[in-house]
Image (tube, rainbow, N blue to C red; front, side, top):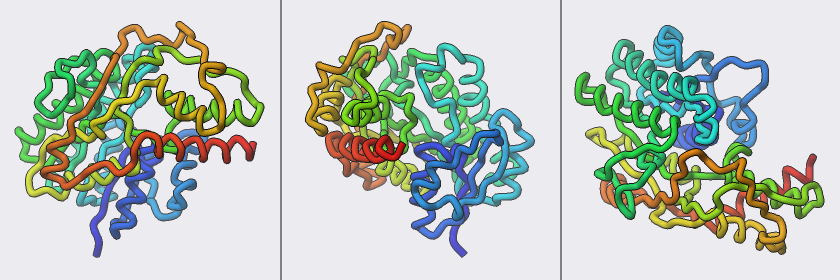
Length: 323
């Protein structure tokens, strides 16, 4: 029989791509989903895998429900992708962000320790932990300086993972992922906000795009590439922490130019700077150094940012045209 995987946040962007990746490798995949009135499985439907993933109801803030989910799933590998994942919302919802992102990870680690300590564990860490960067490019040894409640909560989860690895002998790894996007990205994230607006402006359904700091620089990759790095981490004989990135930065301004150029429009005629979208504490630049991932995992990104943005614009043009 093939391996069994348990994925929290399975209906999110990364969870959906990871589930497809694992299914293609012959895994049985179960995913944790918080029960809500509004269906959240559209990404699984987009990837045509909704009938192949077993959905288990649960709550990251409820240890008992996590213990029950793991006892039912009996996984060989556990991937913790559940989070309040929007950095901007974390200032308005700091307690909720801390409960889900930090305490939720602790609950899952404890449930793992008690129910299936031999299962391998992946924690979704983030480049936002670097925040006010202490080096021109960030690798596994760069000091952390988070600048948002989101980054702080994720850093706590990161250190809980290290602690359970060292204290309880769990095969627990963290992927410090830099920004990774796709056609499945939530509309609140700047890349999807841009590509959706480009489609709407091109099709005459919108006139302008309001953004905040368009000179912020990010290291953007394709989520479909990055889930392969997650899987590779749990195939290693020993656990560890890995930066997953492209090693190339692009400004929000240049990303806008790429997206508008694809449909024959000038971004300067449509982008409006709105102070309402400026963050209380901005992270100006994030640039990852994925040398360790290349060396130890054999992983390298395969999708450059222009190809990624083209993929997203094409998908949003199709979506908007169907509306």
